[in-house]
Length: 123
Image (cartoon, rainbow, N blue to C red):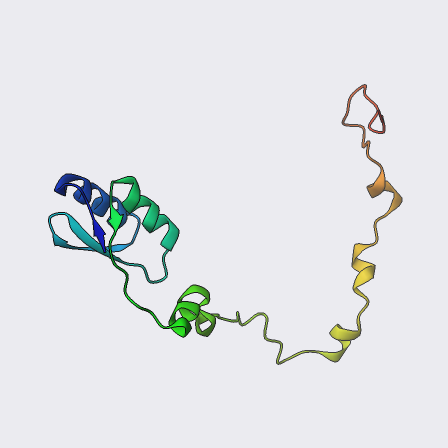
């Protein structure tokens, strides 16, 4: 809950918070609380304080709810392309280092596009 010195500063803070996707709720002309679920708490506090708001009370939240809200571990999705149910044994045994071997031409720094400057000049 934030108290503002006047209704115009509270309205400006409310408009900006709404624009950024927060859910501010006005209780009186100069009193507002912000629902910060899945949003950036620091930004919401900074916006309210930048418009002259002073934090007057906070709702008590259980520690598990704070951790769950901050990290959202139950909402972590695993993309289907990462799950390898159809893994082919030959694919797992393949030497992937062969794909990264560069030829001597690829290692040359000057392919002739430097005009008259040598590509291997060191200072």
